[in-house]
Amino acid sequence: MSKHISSDALIIGGGIAGIVTAVELLRAGKTVTIVDRDSEERLGGLALWAFGGMALVGTPLQRKMGIKDTPARALQDWISFGELDTTDEHSLAWAKYYVENSLPEVHDWLKNEGIKFMPAVNWVERGMYGGGNSVPRYHIVYGTSRELTRTMISALHAANKDNRLTLLHHHSIHELEQQGHRVCGAAGSNDKTGEDIRFSADTVVVATGGINGNHRQTRANWPAQRPLPDTMLNGAHPLADGNMHHHVADTLGGHIVNAGEMWNYAAGFRHPYPHFDGHGLSTIPCKSALWLNHKGQRIGPEPLVTGFDTHWLCQRVAEQEKPWTWHLLNWRIAIKEFAISGAEHNQRIRDKQFLRFVFETLTGNHRLIKQMARESDDFIVADTLQELAEKMNALTCSHDIDPAVLQATADDFDANFEGGAKFSNDDQIRRILHARQWGPDKLRTCKPAPLQTKGAGPFIAIRMQLITRKSLGGLRTDLKSRVLGTDNQPVAGLYCVGEAAGFGGGGCNGKRSLEGTFLPGCILTARAAAKAIISGE
Image (cartoon, rainbow, N blue to C red; front, top):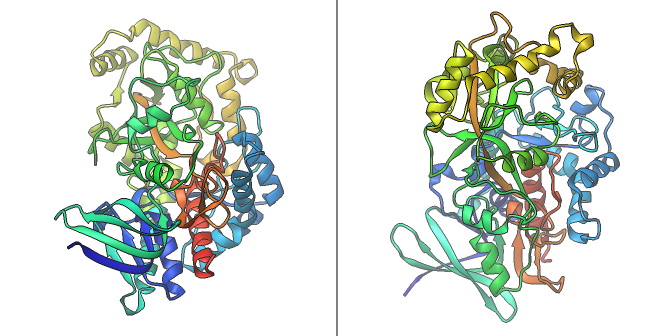
């Protein structure tokens, strides 16, 4: 006879969306069971490793920095940049809900929970020719997303009065169960012992993340009209495999939408100490680095520059002849601009070492560059371009890089500076100068200069690959986070939150994110689900 666990709510998945849902339900006096496939130390899912950037609208910090922002302005940017289908009523409703409620429901709520933000707003995803974020909105959690996750886990345990929380690690849900037309529980098991467990609950919340941790699913859903590289790295959670999406759609009448829309990154490299097969690190690419193809030629005619349109960058990288590209830069650029997304390699912010963070921002992050040069085979350092070309070929076991071609690439770029700034005619330089007009970007972006400037070396080449990250599509939901069927009616007793719901509605971001919409999307959908469950909707 199998073990039986009964509670008011069963939450499938221990990521940030599932945890926030549980916190709100516990505070309302509900009994809650969380079933998570991962280990206890990894509770929090991808949010535990993430950087902690949040797109927020109309915050006090924006006003302090002179940024005039409104929900109406943000929605206009959101729809145009994401190419959001305005006939998709549920995705559009969630987009509106996000811009109108990110201040009270995310920013203010987190501040009340003890979360602080770094004292600057960054300007990302500006759009290739505008049409993206028309003003800076990217707020960074002080302590990174790891601080956010640990704070929410502490809140979870603090809300566990009278042992109303059952938290299971290394457990899986195999199928959801219905009584009549209402979801009433699930069948699962202990992954370590194999023990079968039956779960009974008045409501079930799917919080299993996206599909991009499973590259078979990623490739199966990849839009046919977009280029697909032969190989990719994995920057998603390895247990985000989409299995629950399909179970809900195939057996319970749920509806998966926008499955081919993804928020991947164009510049990842292999994790030196991978946590799982194919594990990659996503860089924040240096604006001043030259982005080259596998032969060492600059990709063009429009140069690839980060900070404007990540979706476009991914397509340009994916259409290259080989599934890797190169970033060519020097030490001067690297210490000011090179960064890796996530908590792991942002030690100063993660550990709240603010003075050290300021010092490294002003003097250069030599520590990280030396670490990558020491640990990563994809991070190549050499005193000359000839030597650099030889090492690049050794890494790829090829003769793809002709040293003369690499030299010509550098010479062609440096020629922009021969007659002074008035003779420069390069779109990458124009974009760098534009980015430097905003103070926080100026601190992290070099003044344009020749690559072969004396004293700026040694040279650095970084082999980059496209890396999967977030799913923009998911199970269709309404503003109460109820799962909807193809008939647009709720599946009774079933909710979906976070990435599994496409961060709201099944795809509220459309084809592009304004960046930083993911953690807030998890919080907004989780709190909406909890409110609906508490009120019995």
